[in-house]
Amino acid sequence: MSNKSQEEHEVYDAIVVGAGFAGLCMLHRLKTVGLSVKSFEVGTGVGGTWYWNRYPGARCDVESWEYSYGFSEELEQEWNWSERYAAQPEILSYLEHVAERFDLYDCIDFNTRVKSATFDESETKWVIQTDQSEKRFTSKYCIMATGCLSSANIPKIEGFSDYQGESFHTGNWPKEKIDFSKKKVGIIGTGSSSIQATPIVASQAEQLFVFQRTPNWSVPARNAPMPASELDKIKASYQSLRREQRKLPLAAQRPPNRASALEVNAEQRKEAYENYWEIGGLSFLGAFKDIATNPEANETAKKFLTRKIEETVLDKDLVKKLIPDHYLGCKRPCSDTGYYATFNRKNVTLVDSRDEPIVRLSKDGIVSAKKEYRLDSIIFATGFDAMTGSLDKIDIRGRNNLTLTKKWEAGPKTYLGLGTAGFPNFFVIAGPGSPSVLANMVVGIEQHVDWIGDCIQYLEDNDKKQIDPDPSAESEWVEHVNEVASRTLYTGCNNWYLGANIPGKPRVFMPYIGGFPKYVRKCEQVVEDGYVGFNIS
Ligand code: N01
Image (cartoon, rainbow, N blue to C red; front, side, top):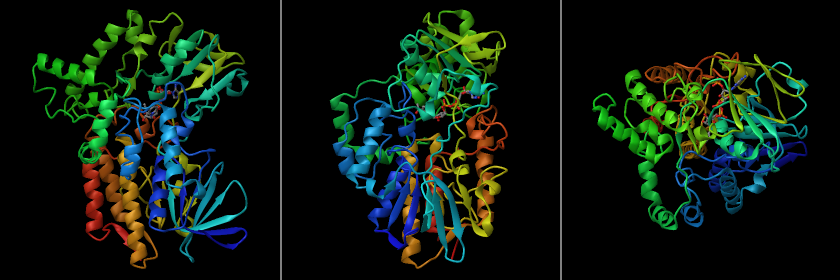
C-alpha cells in the first residue's frame, strides 16, 4: 500500500511506466517481494504493443507458446493457445488474464501519461508527474517499461492536414472494427505491419494501393490452428522447452543450422533453404550460420527468396519492383500470410516510389509524382521511433538536472540496456543496448525483470541507497554493441535499428546483436562479480 503523506503526494517503493508485457511482469515481480508499486499506462487497458496494434492481420511472428511468460507454471498450464502464431486479440486476452490473475489492476492508473520523472538528489527519490493532475508520485525506483516499438511514426508529408478522408496508424489502431468494404484504401509502408495488414485489407477493400518506398523480404509464416495434441506436448514439457529456448541466439524459433551457405553444394543449399522455407517465418534466417555476416552467403538466401517471389507473382514487371536490394535481415525481415499473392488480385496496385514518390497529401488522397490517388482511407504503416521514442516523450532528469534526451543526443548510452550513468535507481526494460527487440521479446523481458528484481532485492537487503552504471563501463558497452553490429550486414541499410527511419535521429545501432545467451551470461557475470560496472552507495 502506498503511503499518502499529503493529498498531492503519494509515496511508493517503485513506479513502473507502462502496462504491456514488460510492465505487467515487473509489477508482478515487485509485488511478490512485498514492495509498494504503482504503474501508469496511457491506454485504457493493459497490453502495450498488443493494446495499440489492433490493425487487421496483427499477430506475433514468434510461436505463441514461446511468446509467453514462463514465470508461472499455473499460468502455463491454464492458458490454451489456439494458433501457432497468436493473433492480436488472443495475446491481448492473455495479458488481460495475467493482470486479473495476478491482481495487478489495482496498482495501475490507466489513461494516464507520465509527463516527467525527476531524480531528487537530496532525497534519493524519483518524482513522477502525470498529465492527470498536479499530484506528485515519489519512489525510490523508477522502471521504464515503455516499449521499444511504441512511439508511432507519422511521417511529415506535405499537405497532411489537407486530407479529409479517414486515416489510421497501424500502431495506434482504433478499438472499433473498421470496415474497408466498398472503399478505396491507400497503405503507406511495406514493413512487418503492412505485410500483415495488406492481404486482409485487400480482401475487404474495393481498391487497395500499396505505397512502397523500399520492398522488404518476407517468408510465409505458415500459421495454423494449434492441434490439442501439440499443446498437450508443450504443456508437459514447458520447463525443458524454455531452458532450450534460452540457449538459442534469438531465444526462439528453430535451432539455426551450423553450416556455412558457402561450404555446401548448390543442391544441399537449396535443400536447406527449402526446409527452412517450409518451417516458415523468421526461422529462415537460421538456414545457414553466415547469412547475417557474409555478403556472399546472404546473396544465396536472397536468390532463393527472389525465386519464390517470381513463382508467386504473375506480373513480371511487378516482381522486379517487389524484390529488395538490401541484404536479407538488414531491415527486419517479415513473416506473412499471402502477402505476395495479394499482388495478383485485380483490386491491388503497387505504387513504387522509385517510379513515383509520394509528393503530398491532398484533400482527397495521396498525390504522387505522377498522379493523384483518390482515397477514402489512408493507413500509415510507417513504423515507430524505435527504442528511444517513448522515453523521449517523457521529461526524464537525472543527477544535476541532466535530461535523458540531452544525454542521449548523439545516440542512446546504456550499460547492458538496463540503466544509464547519472540516472540512479532508474531501469529500462529491453532498453537500447539489450538484445530482446531482435530476439524473443517476452523471454528478453523476463530476463530483464529478473535481473532488475534481484538487483532491487540486493539493494534493499544491503541497505543501499542507489545504483547506476559507471560511465566507463557504459562507454565500453556502447562501443561493444556497435562493434558487434559492425561485424554483421545489419548496418548497411536504412533500418530502425540504426534510427535511420526517423529524419534527424543519430545513426547509431541500438540493439545488442551478439546473441541472447551471450548477453545473459554477461548480465550474470556482472552480478557474480558484485555488480561490476555499476556504482552502488
Ligand atoms: O514499421 P517499419 P512496421 N514515405 O519501420 C515506410 C515489429 N513488428 O510497423 O523502408 C513512404 O518496419 C518505410 O519505408 P522505408 C517488427 O520488429 C512486428 O512495419 O523506410 N514510406 C517502411 O516500408 C518490425 O520491424 C510484428 O523506405 C515510408 C514502413 O513505412 C517493427 O515492429 C508486426 C515513409 C515502415 O516499416 C516495425 O514494423 C508488426 C514515408 N515518409 C511490427 N516513412 C510481428 O510480430 C516510413 N515509410 C509480426
